[in-house]
Image 1: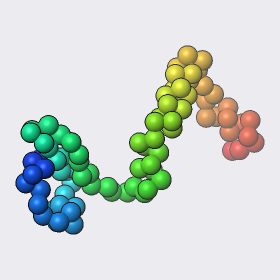
Image 2: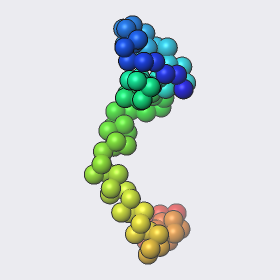
Image 3: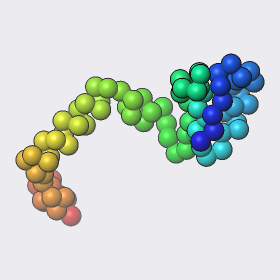
Image 4: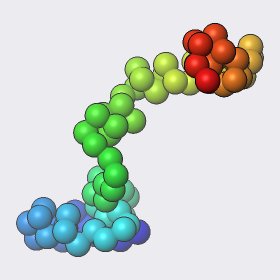
Amino acid sequence: MKTIELVNATAPLLEYARGLGEEPLVLTEGGRPVAALVPMEDSDLETLALSTDPQFLSLIERSRARQRKEGGIPAAEMRRRLGLK
């Protein structure tokens, strides 16, 4: 992970974005992280939006908790119920 102090980040954003490589660039202020540029491979805007949406993340966590508590339906059973092979 690369870091740069915000006051020293004077290059155009394009240069930082193109220079990311495979690791994020963390912008710091007084040594504390305040923002990050993260490389995006095999992703799209919808995936990014959902992965940061508090309501969606809450829905996923409730679903996982219910599955842990009550169990789930095995894939073979779901295929049978849907009439799939």
